[in-house]
Length: 415
Image 1 (cartoon, rainbow, N blue to C red):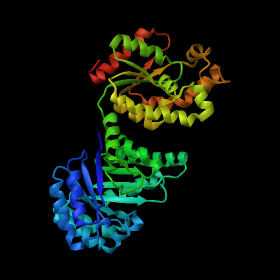
Image 2 (spheres, rainbow, N blue to C red):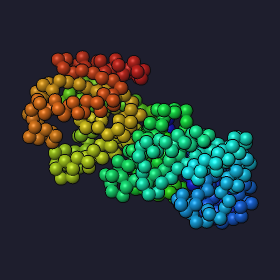
Image 3 (tube, rainbow, N blue to C red):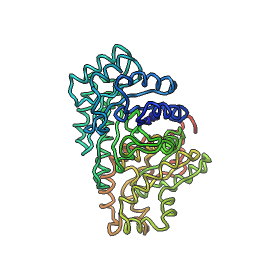
Image 4 (cartoon, one colour):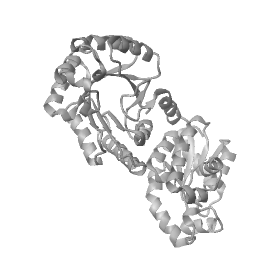
């Protein structure tokens, strides 16, 4: 499901806030967050401003948030009486949501939540860590705490490491926690994000793990790593396009390219080969990319390429052998259609690739035992990724393609 997009109003004066809201009313966004900690007006004005914002943004949901410096907000936010003001906002029904930092204490959060329940205002139970990303278990525990306190939505925003690789692992840990929560509590809405430059992909793809809202910027950003609204909409348009592609995954030598050509002949769907497209764009072979820039660089090229298929007509996508090793890749491919795993015995693979000079992972290891070992390491990833599985040993390419058409057609109704 396509996540909602929320953009922040960070105006200082009442007139500036109202002017901004009129501009936001026509934008392609689902929610607007008013950040109270930027507001320089009087506390007694807050409810009336919120009501005016709600009237202007009639077709969008309004969330009101108050943060202190310690919670990633402005120093100005500390002058408001947090509990009293959010309780008053909750009771007034002036906003669709109020945001409550659950680490302020169960008593504070529970009091605001009780007030909100009487008026029909929903509560976002938030947690922010601007220094690090906690363990997956800690994130799950925090979100579970928000749910048990009675919040309508759980929110977690954490800072990944500045180091690119560690930062990516931090981001994936937060996304894994999101997925775990959705598996345990599918009816409890979540908003999760990894902040900063190394967490931007979580804002684009958090919905594939269960996050129901992503925050974008429309002018001034209210948190590190927010993506401009038009860019985030563009990504969502691609990933949640509803296109029915067929992605072929599997170990090298299982016949993806050959089967792709036959599927094209049978269905008329265009072909796309991720390895070939990367080679053409980079101007060098995959072996050279591995040698000169490393496997991690190549894997990121694969991840970035998937987005583009949302803008293309439904196609047969022949994926590189390692494409399914990244969980994010798999979720993106599944959002675009069916993921078909082609399988073969190690002996079959060896016979098909033994004369190839463009298999960097087999350089110096072109033998059946090594192929079997590598295949066994990848097998759980392939099997977890696939929506359809087809064996290729001892079968004609026509038989394989026809089975794929039959299975995918039954699932999608479009073949």
